Amino acid sequence: MARRYHIFYPKQNIELQQRIRENYLLISQVPFKRYLDQDYRTNRLFFPERNATMSALSEATIIVEASDTSGTLTQARAALDQGRKLFILDSCFKNSTISWPEKYEARGAIRVKNYQDIKDNL
Image 1 (cartoon, rainbow, N blue to C red):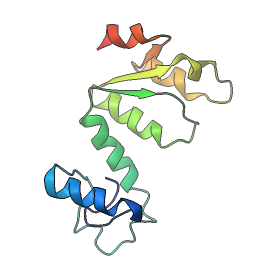
Image 2 (image 1 turned 30 degrees about the vertical axis):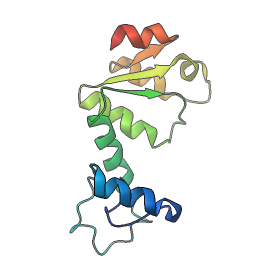
Image 3 (image 1 turned 90 degrees about the vertical axis):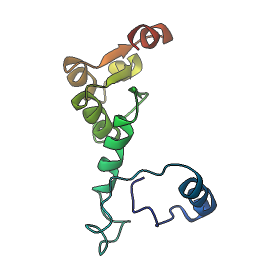
Image 4 (image 1 turned 45 degrees about the horizontal axis):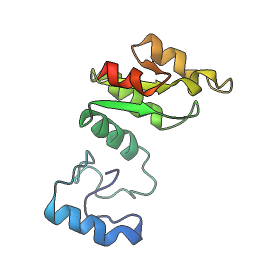
């Protein structure tokens, strides 16, 4: 989660979040005390922390599309830093409006041209 566990956002997910919290495991890297007085809606640090957690809990991250300023790249960096697999669809490399795919491939990300590329690398 990208917020404190007792904050329900979006509001239409209140029942779902309560059910998950009561019956399953709910994980957030947002320190309760540290952010107690901060407005969770304006704190941009919550999402990078959440993305790092998602990466840590996953065997791999697959990027379908992301701009050069996308928050998705936070999870991509976390995946590589954590020694997790990072898959980037070939269409990202062919997109002339972005420059990040080659940088991540140089760091160890795997270019995906078809499903077999993922299967072979997991």
